[in-house]
Amino acid sequence: MTDRAPQPVDRQLPTEESRDLLALVREIAQREIRPRAAEEEDSGRFPREVFTLLSEAGLLGLPYAGEFGGGEQPYEVYLQVLEELAAARLTVGLGVSVHSLACHGLAGYGTKEQQGAHLPAMLGGGLLGAYCLSEPASGSDAASLTTKAVRADGGTSRSSGAESGGDWIITGTKAWITHGGVADFYTVLARTGVEGPKGITAFLVPGDAQGLTAAVPEKKMGMKGSPTAQLHFDGVRVPDARRIGEEGQGFTIALAALDAGRLGIAACAIGVAQAALDEALAYALDRKQFGHPIADFQGLRFMLADMATKIEAGRALYLAAARLRDAGKPFSRQAAMAKLFCTDAAMAVTTDAVQVLGGYGYTADFPVERLMREAKVLQIVEGTNQIQRMVIARHLAGPETR
Image (cartoon, rainbow, N blue to C red):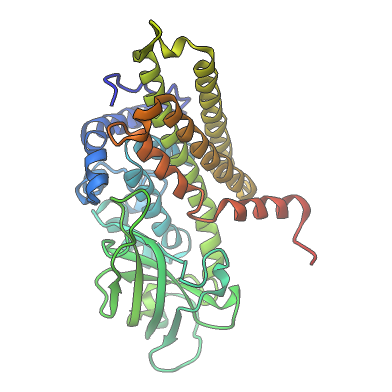
């Protein structure tokens, strides 16, 4: 690893408070996260204490209402926090994004009673969340999920709201769950009615619920410190007071959460790319060949220029989408564009960073090989980039006619 510290990104932030917030995040990242990232990723250690620290610092509930312990920060600011965290360690940045995704349903669709009962602990009380949509046979086609929730008394649908009473019994398997087995709560999408998107309902399930078990975490190419596991629901009993929104509204809730979550992935991708550029630039300035720093050679200079341009373009794209969201305007198309472009950029930039370092880039002595492995998953999670292209095309040309 090079001795040069990464230079802070020149950010355009809306308030003095947000500038102070980013300074705090950079300090925590450099002191508590970055120095241990390589060792802990290599050993597969999940840094739960870091998430506890972030919760204590108010960084796990930034985009949510202060009424329930959130930070009331605009997405424009929240996403730049994610970028800083992901630049230090993707396991942490992506983990914060997933936690925020898990809080989204209750914060946006829960009753005031539900929000008051659960959100304070979720946003600032040290709890960590996970989001359960995908299944072994339904990834991109999420509307075909088969995990079922049925009334414990065998009754039919009742009125909306937490006051309906009764319990639900959830049975099925969820797959590819970030924080699977270590989360304190799960936002779970389950089928309560007809086939397709209209038969899906959302539930808030405690991590210690009886009948809920996690499989052995997946052995992954990267992000080895972040547990990804299947979750098995074997007759898990959940009170109706933990149903989020109306029966059959779950898929709408899921899509709204994913629009926001895609921006989180985009910001994390730019953080990873920025970290790779910082390493490549520092190495190119220090490494000498033929009597000169390799940064003097035009071939490498052009590579670095292209890497920096991709990063700036991606950052501008995700921030433009975030500002639409903050203004209450539609942003689904722009979120898909940001996720697509930023994650493709991260893959390209990290690959070029390995090339800049040559043989050293291919070794674990430098972090760029880890960053390259981590960048790959960002093109897959929360909707593959092929799905993003479908979303964008539908916005442009309407649904497919075939």
